[in-house]
Image (cartoon, rainbow, N blue to C red; front, side, top):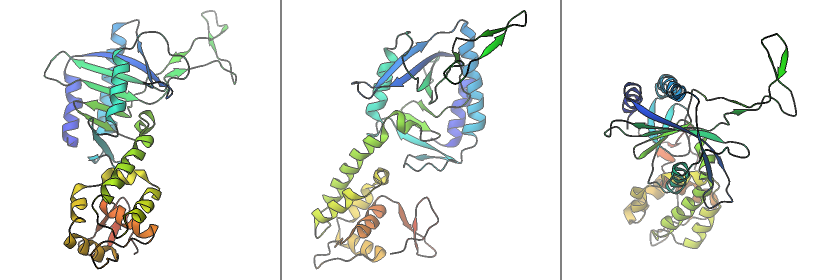
Length: 309
């Protein structure tokens, strides 16, 4: 989906009738389903719909309009782009289904402990228009009276009365949302919600196995050791089949070895001798290193730094 298509989505939200539901959520990683969700009720039926329309307008104007593009999630949001992840992607699918299941089964009892954020679900009255789910990762509950201060309000006869009730604040920004089969994020707050760091470790392990399975190395175990010691699991998100296929061929390895200044043995297999060489090859396979067409220099993706080899 392009930026223009996303703008059209939010325009349709303003122009069509939606039924809205709001849920608070918190997380307990000790449970089989870590998400605890509670449905929120309002005294007036207009409160939530009015909030939803205000939210849609501000997100459209200040978040969607301000991005330069939509890009596939690579763990390195530039703050001028919006990340996109297919809901079938392994880094997200399981956790997203758990959150959906908890939301579908949500009761109306208050959550105990600190609320992590809230979920706004919109279902159109038109069956042809996709449902939207918007999430803000911020505690909406304001405790005015606590161990650090006490809060008062003025009564009708100008006397001060202590405020003991909590207040609830809903923001006019969101952190991520889902339309159809795609997940979109304006920042990386969703990584904490869905425990992405833990999932990325599995992605890294699987990616290392895929690289080793190409049999492109003179010493597979030695490379595997260096690869597992590679610090950033995020790098492996963008491992591409095209470059895996390339290192399976002699011609591909000859080209890459020349580009990265790596050594090959008599069988034209990579001789990766240290962590630096392993890091260079991993970043190349995961499209973190590209060659500039004009200067022929190797550049680090996401920076303007020349790669010294």
